[in-house]
Length: 175
Image (tube, rainbow, N blue to C red; front, side, top):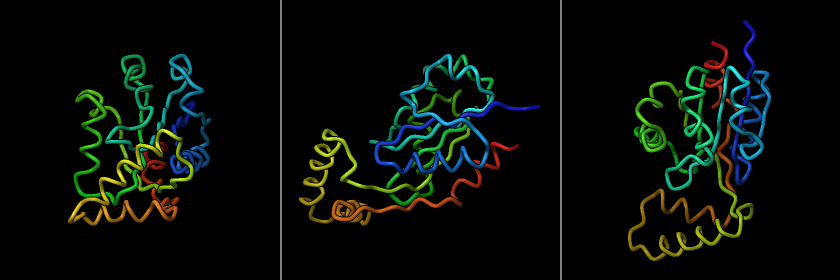
């Protein structure tokens, strides 16, 4: 049976977009930015892959899926999120539990991918928020290794994206 596939993403600095484009290319899917799609659009696909960056533990734009969950729950649903920090043992399950109900967690296949950071690509508001965070981190007497890493990326853009990270997503899409 032919499945109609779509990849939808929300990307502030381009790292999530890069993954979304790679996935869409690999699985032969349509691709759209989150703000250019809606509920009716979701209903026309059999497989929905959604990608968004992590911002204060929330997956950017994922409410498109969660608020329409009852209407799309019988479709194949895959969500990936990109993050700046190294992925630790419990990070994926924590992000999943903060963004989805228990029922949604059972149905939505979730993947956490390492992205990147480019301060210059942020919006004015995001730059302002990140500047406040930077000041808070600089004032700490004993910053953690992750906090030291955050301070370092303000100076130089970093990109940890890797096409091999999408392999499990592509495999799941093709099952």
